[in-house]
Amino acid sequence: MQKNRWLYTSSYFNDGRGYIREDLMANVNAQWEQAHKRDIGVEIGLFKNTFTLSVDLFDEYRNKMLLAPKSVTFLIGQGIKEQNLGSVKKTRY
Image (cartoon, rainbow, N blue to C red; front, side, top):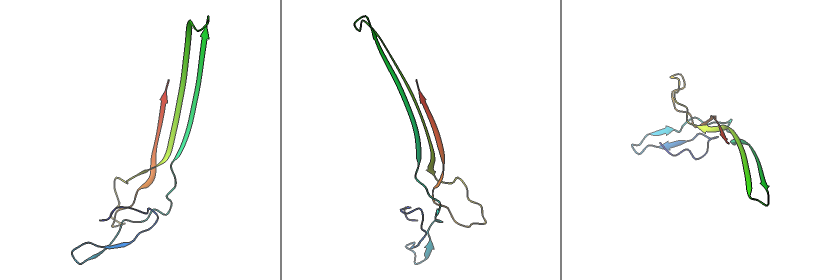
């Protein structure tokens, strides 16, 4: 099987044994990953910077991340290219 170069197309390839095989099914709904980030920071210096305080809050949410499907129904009969299935949230204080 060939490397998935273009998600939105499906093609055929020669498997090296004289057979022509169909590539993975195309993902015609492929989208770019989305990221939403927030970063808030505060720095305070008191008494000519003898005492300092620094606070940083960071939050990030990503969705529509490309992931390979874990299983394929037998009705399809072939694999599917990566889908926009993933999401993750990171928080740092």
